[in-house]
Length: 387
Image (tube, rainbow, N blue to C red; front, side, top):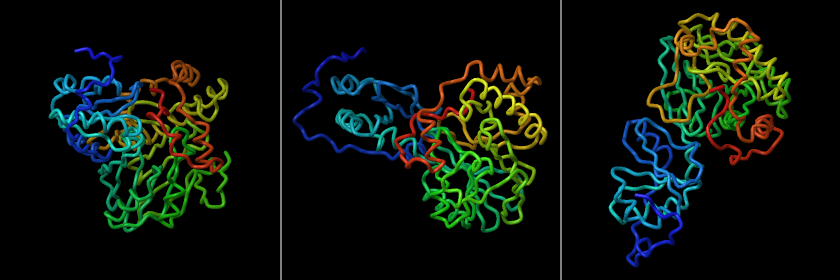
């Protein structure tokens, strides 16, 4: 069926009977249902659906608001099973969900729309086999951002937190620990950091790479700088900083008991970091790409194929398991790692670079403390990978 997008709102859509109450679903609840494999049709009312709610069990149907309400009975006949209606901010979705429910469809509206979806967080335990160390990967399916809570004894270290302190505080409490340290791997360009807010709420040390301070941080007096080779105390488990320049000059990972690498935005399970967000001019981006080549070959791959990579990003979708891989697996999945020549590597990396993240310069300024915090700056999926 093709709906007439120019048709006026029909009498069918504005029946005189009292409409049923609209049912709202929080983004986190929807993400949990999708992670369990529940089949859901996402009815997306936005005109631009290049980025949306994604999971293996999701079917997406795009239809603008006016068309959806012009013939809701016909639309209802096309839909079966559970339906989640989403728009930008969760307002127009409620009218459509109500109209569908009046016609027998199991429809709900996503609370706060896609603005709510980008803030959903899910915890995924990671088993590394390191005695005394618990690792939880915190996934942000609406943006593809990954953060970590590392716990040993009663001390917890949070890496690259999203701007939701309560989530990490509650997670640490559930695991029987307290957050003593918060670390950002670099000055992020594609998402807002929650590190300062979390460190303040938890009374924890705020740690940044030395290179981040060199780039310019307005709150430097609040920071404990972490240099290459420095360690963070964590209940007897060795956590060592490893400088990984290339994505940015300050990019720094954490090596956990020589068993796993929190790689930040240097290496992902199926791709590489882009080198053009700090140095945007062609010559600067090429120099950073060559630096990334040296970092990957001399610092990362040299750790050995059995080391597990805990990346800073993945694709924006719901995952039922942690997104991790060994260096051996990544070596096989990322062909650019087989390029020995740095100049050729730079050519390949920069050849088909995707668009830079939305508002990336302002987001860097926020994360540097030079611009007010504004959650509206975040939109769409992340763009820190070359893929």
